[in-house]
Image (cartoon, rainbow, N blue to C red; front, side, top):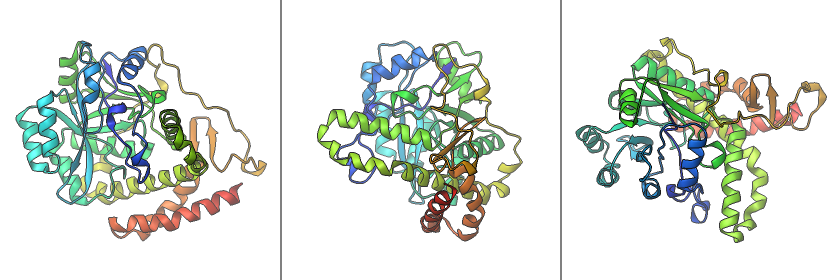
Length: 370
């Protein structure tokens, strides 16, 4: 059975970007539209994981193949934050989780008491802010499931999560982390032999989940942002006044991807050797080699670039389509910068300062490449 275990709807509330949070939603997808889209893509079960909300489920409770889930924003004892997924809960449990989410020991005690299935999402992403080494102790010791494939995260972040999960004997989950209809169902979790919701979730508990799909990149980020802003313009026409800011989207997306790559590599290499993560025999699921679910069209690049660097293609500084698929140029340029970045990072608080300096170097380099 298949299920996309990380999907958002309009119930996820307002976005977290400063200023924009006053008028832009995190997601504009209607719950029923998401359900119908997932079913058309061959999902056997459907759930949605909105941020700290289960409001979307009122429209979906009537479906036998739907179960209630939630992405809970938690506070760790170090003062940092993280996102965890809790599956198949009821209204009362949702209320209790929200009351306890700033007290992690109390939250974990309640999850165990209620025998709820839960896991940590995008472990090696800076999406929720800074990270502390002791945070990974909590993830290792208290979270039975780790998200090993997130459709919005970089391949390296997903690979590191898969390696750590395998080394630790964790069950894995996978989901699209879709905030627009275009990416719903692009990543999902498969449990072979499951016959219904109960056996699917039990299979996840036993570590029988398998991740299927592809990781994200700068192009996916830009597509999601454009999809959200397009719906924002339709809902609130006066926001068209901020449309010129979209011209900066490619630069922002590339900068964010570089930051994510450094964040993921820093934490994996800092902790991986001492904790044995690097010794795990692992690889990402070969999703690109598998047939897509019924009714799903494979994602294809808009065009193919075969010119070499010497051709001076003006689009080269944004992205290049290689034989294996679409990758942003920063992958080639930024990876060369990563060793020097890591040498200059002496603690997690200094990551932001190093990246600000290196990001400007990245754009100088890409301009020269053009």
